[in-house]
Length: 351
Image (cartoon, rainbow, N blue to C red):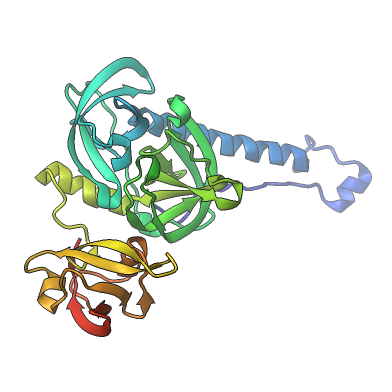
């Protein structure tokens, strides 16, 4: 995506002071017509409005509504072969889906290609793709900048073909998704934070810039603990386009994700509590044979308390600590065994 976005300019022409004093005639010979500030602002607003309408017209036909037996969400047409990318939490445990396009009332059948809950993404495929199916264009999310105008497209609360507007509020966020309400519990890196309203049903849809490029998939809305964990207005998060395309391309080609780009210890773990019932570390339930933890000498029953210099108290905090590393990095892992604390160096593997 280009670093520049459509910007409006105020073009204000004024008569020379001497002519104004004499009462200039804008239509007279040699005179420059003037426009009032209100007229210029109106022209600028019209131009921005036209930009919004152009983007909506070009991109919205690529944003679909996905219905499962018990849930509803959104998806993006990925190619003209009928592949549709969405969130893993939208598809849940379902393998068959009903898909509708914003500009077509026909209900289309689709089946699951693969789901990748570790990064909350999935790809489904239309059984009989329509001719002229329009694939969305994905932008370069590494070039997304704070302040850019964004449009969120999807089916919030079942209202298909809905569009909301905001800006990019921040980039590079690491956000952990809860497991309640169908969440995958994934820790997702480099998310795009946006002020465009994101409501239930928007998940899996498109976050779009004014160049008509998808820069992310709206996935999460922040919650406010002071308001009973209800949605915090104007704070939503989208999985960046670079992650979406990397995962989707692998699923379409191989039927699964073979390289997440994320580091892992190679363990199955669970959060443990101390005597005060507070989270105190991650107990290793099992290690992957021949995996990073196994090679480093970690074993079932060990309690991980630190990765590098980052304290680990829960499974979520362990995931968040690992996102700072890439596969192949060597990191010190502090753990407890039989009441004693020890440290070992682990060469990280792939998630």
